[in-house]
Image 1: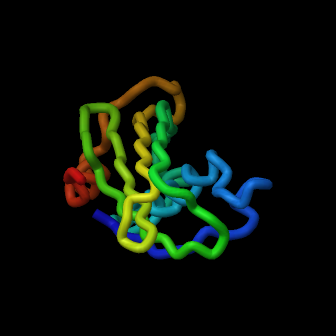
Image 2: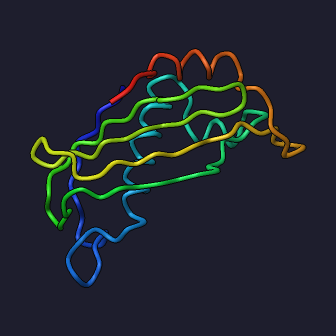
Image 3: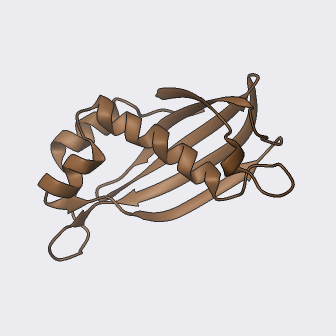
Length: 135
């Protein structure tokens, strides 16, 4: 699991002063990027140097308590499912140690040239396995 501390920025909220629904995915994705970097897989490196891509194919979020500008949050991210060609990441966004939001994203590994699904490369799989778990 990876943990990231941040806060809700004003520009991430709507006219009601609550986090705009899609911005929770941006926050989650930042934690995902930190997870990849911790295992030696920067997004830039993947895009420039690898023969595969890892696009999102499904996202979902549940909001438990309001998130407002200035709220300090902790994002916990882990790999909750690991298949042959895809993996699922689960996130908890905590505000004052309470779950404020739960996010789930599914990524599929595709061949950069053909756009077809391919097996997750072994080195990436090993890195993902280190973050496998459940909330």
